[in-house]
Amino acid sequence: MKSNDSFNTVIVGAGFAGMFMLYRLRMLGVSARVYETGSDVGGTWYWNRYPGARCDVESMQYSFSFSEELEQEWEWSEKYSAQPEILSYANHVADRFDLRRDIQFDTRVTSITFDESHNYWTIKTDRGDQVSAQFCVMAVGCLSAANLPDFEGLDEFEGSIYHTGEWPHDEVDFSGLQVGVIGTGSSAIQAIPVIAEQASSLTVFQRTPNYSVPAHNQDLDPDYVKSVKSSYPDLRAKARARPTGFYFEYDTSPALKATAESREQQYEAFWARGGLPFLGAYGDLLFNKEANDTIAEFARKKIRDIVKDSETADLLCPDNVFGCKRLCVDIDYFAVYNQPHVRLIDVSDKPIERFTKKGIIANDIEYEFDSVVCATGFAAMTGSFDKIQITGRDGLTLKEKWRAGPRTYLGLASNGFPNLFMITGPGSPSVLASMIQAIEQHVDWIADCIGHMKDVGASTIEAKVRDENDWVDHVNEVSQVSLRSTCSSWYVGANIPGRPKVFMPYIGGFPIYVDKCNSIMMGGYEGFIMAGSEKPTTPPQVRCTERWHVELDMEVISPAAIAANRVPIV
Ligand code: FAD
Ligand code: NAP
Image (cartoon, rainbow, N blue to C red; front, side, top):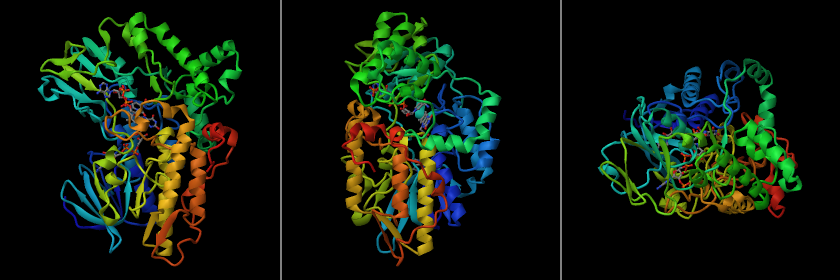
């Protein structure tokens, strides 16, 4: 399809973020076009079709909250729904709100260029489209640029190679095959037990062991679903008041104040509940190394209890900070190593040497495979931005500007790139929050901003350099108080050689962040320059953001701010 159309807004990406942005812009009565590389909606859940893929935030919360009808009519079947069900949900949303008519699929945006004399963006795609728009919204996803390491000899391998984040649409049958898996992050930990059910042999290459907590997944009890649905607004409000943007019971008392015996009981109780809320057993676990050591040792003991071969168990035991890398949630992961056809190869000291025609050489041994699964993650947070030539004022590209690490104001905008918004961009809670909530909050803020600009006849909005610099400093400073900043993880870009090591998401907590966004908006978009109108700072008409009003309970909302004390609380 070729087009020379002009739109109020072009949205890049049709995952949950792009879909909801489109919905909101339609409410404002402005024209919008979405471009999506994939052939359908769903983003993450369209691409990550690997066996075992499912969410790790409970489905009843990992879902949109903007439509009561949608909340009430959709039926989740499991506590942590599997990828096909989440993709069906995305399709249902697209159908219900008739979104597809404004989405152009199978189309990758290749460049976005700002025309300074006319204040509009020109958007080009790999299918020859060239369109213009006053606004661009980057809904490209935080975990959407698959990382396939540059393994030597990859092209020589005669078997099949898969990446978990770009899984084929046709069913992949591993029955009777010798399969290798590279990686032991969340994707691998979900896929390995399921692949092991089919493969004749399964070999896992582990560079860094990971902590993982059992999901204790289950079918949802209809009475539980009914009770959640009868008080959904309460649940959503409680979720928004939490640093993570999702609700679970947790204990804010310090681990080190408890006796060893009561700590053990507490960890057992939280382990029995399972999933990410395990980290909520105490309030200081991510801020005090000594406290963290207690939960780390508990988790290692669990691994040793499960895995019978002590050498394998030792290899599987991480020695870094618990929860420093993104915590994994599994279904029978560690137990898989008790199966005779599953083996673990440690590549921590010596990297995988190369691929050959028949398999992989590691530690001087050639392992033969029919298929290799690369569960090697993503160029997180900025990877999908880097793939687009985004040129702002004075010919500056976003890639150049972000060379030493991403620089944004609130993770929503970047100086030099007027009228370009990011959904869950670096510098916002994004991946540290339940992402659908984070997406909805950003979309609502952007929609109100675009609505306001329409109301007052403004032509551009752009982050001011000073406010952006202050925000970047604040994001960095807050990250230092958390133990999360102390290890190599994709949060800091450390999973891929050559990337700048900067803690990218905002760790100060979702409610503090939301409050900051609200006050900036109500203050007439403080920290932004809005041009082309005589009344840009008139308080905006709040159309969408109202629902993001949060009661700040300092004891609960920001352990980071509290632990820091010296950190300016925004
Ligand atoms: P995405 O879903 O990544 O969508 C971005 C879309 O943009 C993609 O479809 C991509 O094709 C498109 N795109 C990118 N660049 C271009 C371009 N140049 N041109 C056109 N289109 C482009 N988060 C949670 O909160 N809870 C979970 O349980 C959870 N589980 C996850 C499980 C997996 C396996 C993964 C990988 C991530 C998970 N996440 C989870 C994070 C997840 O990414 C978000 O929850 C959410 O789905 C992101 O939605 P999005 O629309 O922002 O981005
Ligand atoms: P990941 O966490 O980055 O894991 C990638 C794995 O590949 C790591 O074990 C990494 O080792 C390894 N690896 C990378 N390059 C390698 C190389 N050259 N040689 C050997 N090993 C290599 O990626 P992911 O598992 O896809 O998960 C990414 C994020 O997506 C998660 O953290 C989570 O936020 C989300 N996700 C969520 C779920 C869920 O449960 N809902 C499931 C999947 C993904 P190192 O650790 O040493 O780098």
